[in-house]
Image: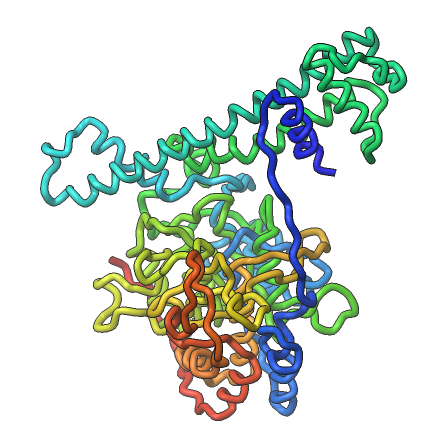
Length: 559
């Protein structure tokens, strides 16, 4: 029972205050729809069984997939078989045995943790950090006194200040009615308790309260009688009060997190927890080896899509069989930091990953140069990067979703885009105009193609399973297909795998609803390849492609 919604509706009925929300349900597809075949099963799945059948006579080679995310539950029953182990490191001896700069990095690394074992859970948004950074420079300067070369930066400051202050105001305004409603509910309970002159609830006595009693007494009577018939168990008014306080506290917590972290430019996790030299984006030796972290739901869900055990009789089936998951914790509850993203990419490339999944993003950047340098380094090491396009129903062609494969002039060296990058939009199971997820970002030049990303069932922490939606789910579907290809065809380069995936998409013969709009468009109008990812057609394409892979060493290019 949603006690908060129920209490709110009662308060509204009594004409005292509050707003209610509406819940709705929709028809759900098969739990494994994203693995099924479009023709046979009438869903936008990736034809995984047909892909394995096509590759049945091929030898498989292990592939390491780095998941740069919130953390992965490496002990999950459906994932523990596929967790990468750094064979050159001796566990828990406090020594950097492989001399890669990271002590006891057995299963990956945590770039948002401190040496004392603490972890960043909540974090500011990038626009908040930019506001804090620029405030000291421009807070006391009027526009007419800004130097011409600083005008663009000054405009960013004004925009960031406006956004942060506007959001703080919205949060405070949203909190006030919730706090007021809580006080009304608690006052109603107390009114009944005072009327009864005891803390123990006597329902027969409550029923005798006059209907025309005071507003609080009448409301308290209605609430107690209604809750008494519910599944809640209580015997005293104090117990009811405790239940209400707990649920209202949870409701207000989400707002307070935004107020205290997301839009609080004075909060600095780097000083209080991480302890790195944040001004130096090329400082890389910080963090700890806790690759799970305080909230590993997102990363665990991503990992299951790629690598959940395909041969046990429980849970779900992942896409790739011969795969190992390297967990690199980089994404908190808030915006990831460019420095951590760059170092995570470098760590993955240096420690054997051939695919990186990055299911995160933002619309502002602190140090794109450092991230671009890491992307180029990963390219030199033949590492394929899969990135989620974002969930704002935006056109990424007109509004950059960071990190991005659009390289800065210093790094693109004659070409504008990284060759080892795939940007993925999200699909629903519907084979009609609702095929593209209503939330998915898109882009004729910036999003490569679409893959399943709605109602995806996968692993969740502590041996649980959950359904989630987002381009965050579509990216690991593509990472799983990529791992399948690289395991069967190790001579193919990252650039070749990208081209295979793009050229083997299934055509979409019908128009789709443009996310965030009501108009219908062809899929080719909102992505590069104009189609839907498919494992079977990709495997068949790979079988006809001659590998070009060479031994690559690469080097980190410093600005």
